[in-house]
Image (cartoon, rainbow, N blue to C red):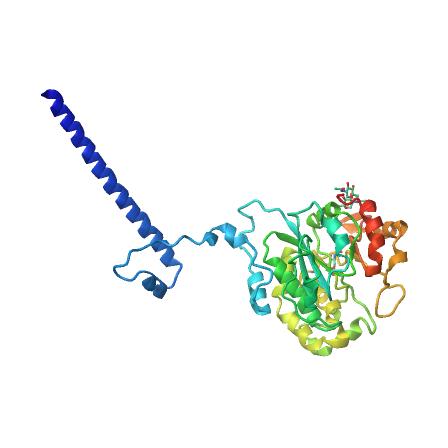
Length: 379
Ligand SMILES: *[C@@H]1O[C@H](CO)[C@@H](O)[C@H](O)[C@H]1NC(C)=O
Ligand SMILES: *[C@@H]1O[C@H](CO)[C@@H](O)[C@H](O)[C@H]1NC(C)=O
Ligand SMILES: *[C@@H]1O[C@H](CO)[C@@H](O)[C@H](O)[C@H]1NC(C)=O
């Protein structure tokens, strides 16, 4: 008798427990449903919420968009985006007020290729970049859209062409292309240094040397000097005053290298750029004056005032010496690597140039044969 009573009470407790448990589960589910629903509705417009939940229809919570976290925010958009220049520059000019990154950030070097057609010396650069994934990014601005067709799928240049526009020698649209390259590269938060290169540029050192030289530099490398005469101050227009005065007018090679802070300032500048846009076109060669003048006036103390890209103007005329097949020898490349002594982070240094131009496509074969060994590429 006693044991049946016992069994009954055990069963009762069990049944009650079961009922309680099931009810609780349903309640909890309800709570989490409505919680997720509130979260979702916060990120949509009120009209969207009301159409998403008509009265009497069961609610199925949509999955949370994955990019609500930091990871999605940090992911750079597709290179072939549909932003106008104005939209792109606005987005790229965003700066976090908190300077420390709340995640492990490996600084990358952005290699910005400003070319007419394809990157003709690409096979040499392929060898240069090999083995250094995660430490660099490549962007190609090429007005010739056939440039993307000629890139093989396994190349580091594959899919790296940005939305590009026409560029004419000496015109202000050359500077616009440079700013477009900078802005696209700024969309990747891990890019820390930005180097502008042409299709005629070669590296003079291996990747590890170039990377540490740039990432550890306390200065920007924007060549800037004051020059009397027709090709210097002679290109200045009085209409640029008072925003740019004649004594502030500077000249320098267009092939710059700069850090993230300066890159943001360059793309965000409207005041100086509009002066150059209006009064420095054609024979003024804005690409040799806008960035040197702007940087010297506003951020001169951050600048080394020299370029990292070797070029030979010794023969005179409007174009520098071009190097073709027979010019490429071991001695010649050695000479470029130990060009002269300059300052690096306030100390004398033998390494003044990391890149050189102008090399034609005919030089490629010999460059491929000599350079990787001489420069100790990662083979
Ligand atoms: C890169 O070149 C330097 C000399 O310029 C050399 O000391 C270094 O070992 C090379 N790096 C690699 C990874 O081969
Ligand atoms: C470069 O020029 C600017 C402006 O004239 C100057 O402030 C700066 O100290 C120079 N940089 C170096 C490394 O001498
Ligand atoms: C030049 O600077 C590089 C990069 O910091 C350094 O590795 C090298 O030792 C320096 N060379 C001289 C001669 O100071």
